[in-house]
Image 1: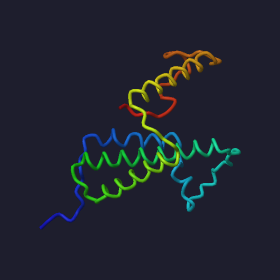
Image 2: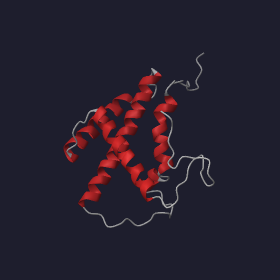
Image 3: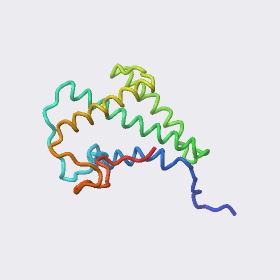
Image 4: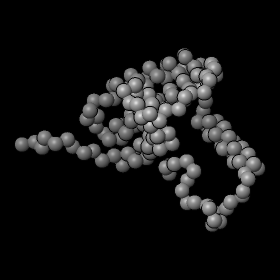
Length: 157
């Protein structure tokens, strides 16, 4: 007789593919709960006044977060070699729909990966330079108060 228990799939890249989802939850605890009207943790702070630019930025960030997560789940299912739960058609539909909404609703345009990396690198280097220039106390590795924990949880790629 066949084993009625669900089969556990071993996906070699599962941890790498799910790491960004873990990071989203570590960086902003309660993010998913904040969107759920049935969950009230009582920890919500009032929003600052929002103008059109703020709302557009929130829309873009929210869409990108959902789209990235759906894409990572899609990759995970493909990497497993078996769509046991039959989710690929739904993920395909969601990704297509959300990409179209992102393109049409936000005016998003394709930018090559190389250009995105160049831009992100410049932003990070500029932010570091500003932080270094305006830091009240300069601390280096090995000095008192310098921790081993990252300032923002990140997984190694």
